[in-house]
Image (cartoon, rainbow, N blue to C red; front, side):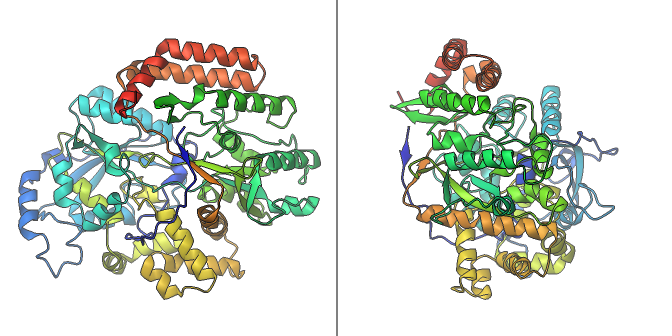
Amino acid sequence: MKTKTVSLSLAVMMAVSAALAGCGSAPSQNAPADAPAQTPASKAETGADAETDAADAENTAASENGSDTDNPFAGIVKSNRTEKVTVTMGRHTTTNPKLPEGQTYEDNAYIRMTEDVLNIDIVDEFEGSNEDYDRQVSLTVSAGSMPDIMKIHTQAELMELWENDMIQDLTDVYETYASDTLKEIYATYPEGMGLDRATIDGHLVAIPGAGGDCAPMICYVRQDWLDTLGITMDADNDRVVSYLEILDVAKQFMEANPEGAENPVGISAIPDLVWYEGEGAWGLNFISNAMNAWPQTWYEKDGKAVWGSTTEETREWLRFCSQLYQDGILDPQIGVRQWDDVTALMTNGQFGFAFGAVHTPNWGLVNVYSLNDKCKYSTFLISDENGIVRHKHSDSAQQGMIVVSKECKNPEIAIEIANLFYGATREEDKALYEKYPEVEQYNKFLSVDHSCRPYNIEITRYDNNLNAALIRDAYFKGEMTLEEAVEKDSGMGDNLTSLEAFMNGETKEPADWARYTSDWLAFSLIKVLDEYEKAEWVSPLFPSPTPTMKTNWANLEALEAETFIKIVTGAVDVDEGFDSFVEQWNAQGGTQICEEVSAQFGLK
């Protein structure tokens, strides 16, 4: 495996407003899908019927780019549409968008601003959250038609759309219409990430989500329970605790049952056991990472691509988890708990831990606080028994990609929407707020979910998380003024003043608590990890779908999920079950897939 001990310091300042490119898409990515897919009652004609075509718009952009000094948005909108264009979209939604009463995904301040600035009319051809949305996309692809613009989640979907000639080559469109700021953001990503994740045979065929390198997996623990029981975690105060210490405290929580809940559990997790993203939301990644096991991860080992679920390290992780299950520390219903079920354990006072990303308080733990504003969480990094903190770099496109229909005559609109929300300069951000004050209200005071924007993705610098942590740390240490913080990141002004208000007891609103727990307690650990001497980072491989993956991967995933749950719950012997799994996995296409992935990355 390719591991390395590194410093994460990246001394490049953020070039995009956090206010317009925040992490609001993450909740609906990591949280469960619980809203049915919807199809708006009315549909307008598609952008394919618009009179202005891409070639005319490109010529206009080339002649007028930079010449309109009176237009504060000239760097965002490089085309010159004199007539309004209707654009149909597939929208990935969430259950609780926190929109003001009477507003919808198709009619809200974000959409109205977009339509006004770009001179377009957005019509949602379909809407849905997570699995329901994916189902709508699958039906759309099967039917051989799609809206002008829609979001997809996987490389497999991207490849299928491209091979079936359903989506556009955006290479020239991006080069012509992308703002300088948007290009600068994507340029911060290392080779193989950023735009490379949406490039096939040299053609840019989608606008990839790019959420930066993920922050470390965070251990959230009920500090009020620790206080009640007189338990001390992190005795040396370095904000790093071992997975063994976590398990010991989990057992004490379960036995003491501080809130007198029915059926308390020590540790619970989703049926997949691990979450494939680096932060490991609601999973047992905190154990696998510490044991140097990397299930559901491709990486290089001994010069070859390997699937981490088939390694000896994963066998030992499963053995350890099986023993935890036998000892009663793992939830007896671990094989059937879904996202909502694990969250309910926390809100009901049955479970005193959470494991996940820095933004987990915004969509998960805030539910606990909403029912009990006396609850307090502490945050820690997670190590092995020797103090080594292991983590893996994230897939920059894990949030999905935006594709444009081959029939859409105005593909530049897709790029301009990205410019508007992710590629604006500080001056353009300010001008947008001045002209569209309702959008400022959305961001600063109402906490409207960012899935209400046209794209439910995030595009930020690769070093975005670390930069934000460093700015907040310097400000609260008195090493940076508010003005200096805003100069480095224009979105920090409201963020820092909101954090101060909560710290000073001026507010107890759930949204403010979530912001404090996420943006301060959790984000501060990014700086801790950056300076931690025993940090090991794994660099996964992120392959495009191979020929054998397309035909065999679904069955291999089902085999893995079924076998791993059986091993952990004791339904099959650890060694017999794991040996059988690896043998079947290899025989059912796994060996061939490993060879194909190795070939993609020039490995033997």
